[in-house]
Image 1: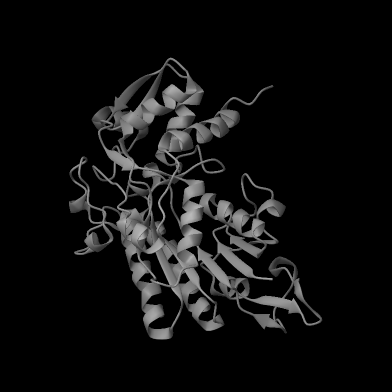
Image 2: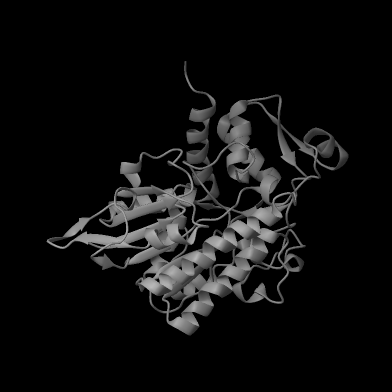
Length: 358
């Protein structure tokens, strides 16, 4: 039986990924700082769900170890139910490192969380890559982000440059992006120096059901679906709404991740995203159209925004769009689902949360 470890599997992408791996027949361990997944039952996504802080090296060390029954090799003891030291130690076939301190624009771009974002995520990645190298995992995937691309290449909302080769000279627009860039280099350095079999991908705005949809850490598609479902007088959009982005539906992200992880032609970094770019106002209007509610877009910025929320309006770069030629070249694959199709599924799920029948 093949084994997989999903760090950050209590989150949105990690939960979907763990569920897919279990459906494929893997024995799956999830480790997350959250005591439980917010939306999935643990039995649906993994064989072993362990709550632990990956900033602690001892937690990471335990998470990477598999104890098999010496008389029945397919019997694997749960990390959360068994104590070190292990006797029959094996290494994971596939490790996915998705754990990070992150959120939407309201969390990443205010500046108030910069120190925590860099400290927490860097510690997790330093612990993870060292333990992966020490335990001889078969291969490990690191989820970077499009936020590491230089701000100066994303000033024109109609023509942003997010080709992989454009990453340097480095100039991310947030500390979150700087930490992602550092950790990319960290994983690739371990690949060069210690032979770690690494895959590094840069995710571009992944969205879909079973993800954060309220509370300030949600991404734009979830926020727009929630606001449309709430059916207030109007739908508030931060900034002018002329900022451009592309968004990739979660099912496409999982397929792309597994294809990339299991090929042997290159390690990345490579973009995983959609090339269907829209303005934020267009995204908001799409959510309104799907909802069928009679709403108008109301843009808020400047002093009006600061008076309402207590901090300057966080917008990020003017434009960002995935460039997928490298992925197509190596994988012969590209996303098939349209943004509208993904938004319809996401709206249906969020609407069920907002408008719970009594």
